[in-house]
Length: 561
Image (cartoon, rainbow, N blue to C red):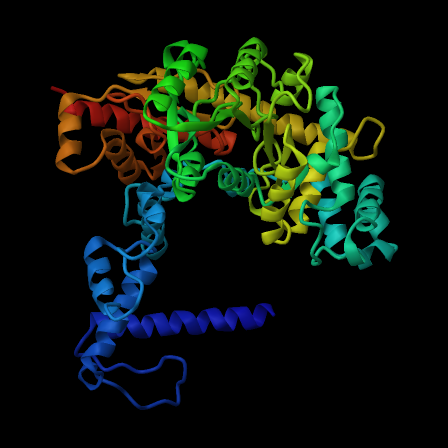
């Protein structure tokens, strides 16, 4: 297999070399380098003009996943006879934006391709993707116990081999047997119940009960491919028209603005208070709710992200109680994004689920409608590519639950590996299990390192001219504010860019560091920010700080009045 792959790679490279010679050397003869016995040659003029043009476009598009506007224009003209035009597609798709993988990231991908072809093409030797919470792409290692169980479930025949006892821990083998007994056909390639495998939902409920001290029902659990599909499912359920609004924090994670746009609703913003560490004020919620009502908008739900993304704050329990009371009084569904619940870095804060808070206040199943989102992509596990997660829904009538189940059924089920991981995340090894000590050591090492990285980056950012950064209490990001010189803002306007996007693009071109402009998350008008992850490995942080510091000094000097 490896020999085949290597041979195929050589052929692809040979073809690419051939295409390059066609485009770059129009008068040169072209011969196949894959066969020494071939004596035939071709000249550029023997190729039709359209073929040469096609090869040129092919090379251009393969080098850059996002062609320039001029390339796009020429390509668009080639498709003039096709039935789908930009003005005939769903306008909700055009309205939708997702800055985390937007223009800056597209440029970064192009620069990365440049570096592969010519390592000296830019003043840096690598692209550092600090734009997205993707831990394993930046070197974080998966948790051994989780991967052992997954491997055994995916290849159950090795459970019967004698060598397995020496390669895998006893509790991972036992857990794999338990899980396989719950899966139809004992096969991870099989469909499951549309809410997810019942035994895995039982395990998740056991973890929720251990965390909160209140019972959980497996019938309330819907396993999904990460938390994002669950968010879309709830938006699809709640939004009927543009007259339906969803209260969202600003700054917000772009999933929410994108999903609201796709499902045809209206985002009703409430602003977090940067001066108080991104505080969430009930007075602000009330003001925005009343403003929306005055415009004829029926507000259906309140989104709360705790710990915050992109802002990194952790809500105090008394603040959560105020939020629960607000939702109860106003008849709002509380959509609690709790995917960073394991990522707490400061001793004076701890995570409390909104379900625990609501139950502690005496609110039961019929008192408040609450949806809690969890994912295997964040925390200390960082299994983004495995696409596992769930939502726990409480406070919905049987008739509404039936409709939610129907929507889930349309997608058949989430992937089984993600379901398994979600059960492991919520029900990891316990004291006395063979894997417990190694599991705890891996978990503690990751979270402790993240806390140190957050502190180092926070201190460095606060040391830069015109930059202020609240502490990262949790999650995986810092969201510093940058006060840009007037000349920089004018230069951004001339380039038809938001000032923080202008800064981020200049940062990328100078250093290879990828951040997300704050304008992609929305922000108080007239303020500028960027989001930077704390995920690069700890030994890389000093180099990132050095690059960022040098760039920022040069940028400020260049645009100083």
